[in-house]
Length: 212
Image (cartoon, rainbow, N blue to C red; front, top):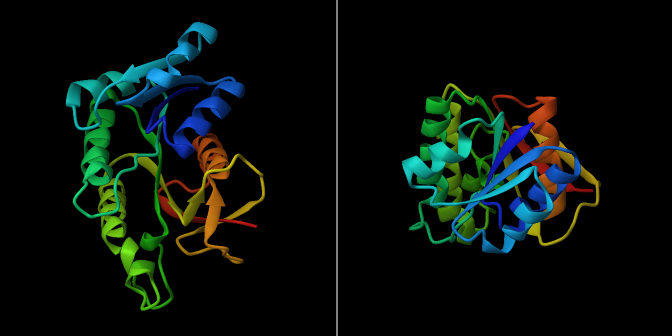
């Protein structure tokens, strides 16, 4: 499979790059600062590092054209001013539609998961207020996907630990998984996202994830 990975130099994205290559996929790693990945071009003919900006239409169209699927691990600040997650997702969706690429697995935050009263987790009284602004960004990205024609999956992550894959994690559609330990290794998120690209278990759904 040819996979375009946005946010390829972040905690999750970089691990997704290496795991995808190890599994035999062809990887197109996209980001503004991919210089530290360039050496991979010399060692692996299945890898291409693409330097570009996620807001740039031509850059993103080039990155997705010819790919079978997209994995987005876009990040940014938590201040609510940085619109990388929402505006970046808007451009990715548009360029995927132009290029005829249908499948995307995108990373966001757990604040967009449902709670039993029909609202979002970020609206709960015990939700950490410092994450409210970024959760609204995640919500906008999620709604853009939900209202698109793409075959999307939105991974709603709790606190991300800068650790490699353990293989010990649990997922649940729409709601927090149980048990919920409110954290997950970056390598485990990458592992789940890559497998979901192929398994298609949660198409048109958001997914909660947690370490066991």
